[in-house]
Each structure stands twice: as structure tokens, then as C-alpha cells.
Image (cartoon, rainbow, N blue to C red; front, side):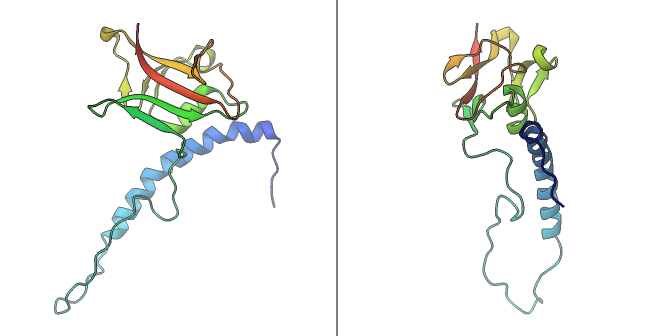
Length: 161
């Protein structure tokens, strides 16, 4: 039996699916590593032949980020930004949490304020903050309020004031 949801219901499930997939990836990787520890050795009088190069992802798991989700980093490898595509009706915040479930947010909904992305928290002592742009223009509303559209590029950049 197939359940058909109205398009607005389907759109609301996208971030939840991404968060679920993002949570499932570490579990699947751990299971794959543990499964690889099982003894499949050849008898000691038989030489081992060939080498295996492990895949970064199990064959039945794909990463939650799409190829257009891009972290930017400074020379030290620290995250300085991220870009991802907008989706009709989804908020910039829900999409951010879908591509970076570790993002740190203070407050909820319209009052949500992003303080950390990619493991990097904005440093108040350095007057840093996470700036939100849509198609290269500063957002006029917060991430929890900003409804995105297909074809837009959402960009967060670590900025100073």
C-alpha cells in the first residue's frame, strides 16, 4: 500500500528524513566496521592474496549531504561557511539542520539564532557571528522564518561585526 501525502506534508518530512539519515550513517559505519572484524582469515599455511580498499560509505548507505552542500574552510581547516540549495517551503534553518545536524542553535522557530556550524561556534570575544545569505544577498529575516525556494542558494558565512 502506498501512502500519498499532500505536497506540503512531503516537504515537511524532508528535514526529518535527512536528520534520520544523518543519524543512521554513523550507526551503519560502526556496524560495518564491527562486521569487518569477524574472522575471515585464510589458514596459516595459505598466503593472503590481494588487497581491499574500503569504501568510505557502505554500499547501502549514502551521505545526507548532496553534492551541492559545500563547507568552506580556512587555511587551518576550520569551517568558515556552508552553502546548500533551497527547497520550496522549507526554512533555511530546517535545511541547515538537515545538512549539518550538529549545528548549534539558540532559541526556536522565528527566534532561532544559529551560533555554530560544522563544529565551529562563533566567538563573541572576536565579534564573530554566522551570517545568512540567499543568492548572495543578506537575509532580511532569521533562519527559522526564511522560507526557501527551489533554485536558491543558501549560504552561511562566519563574519565579524
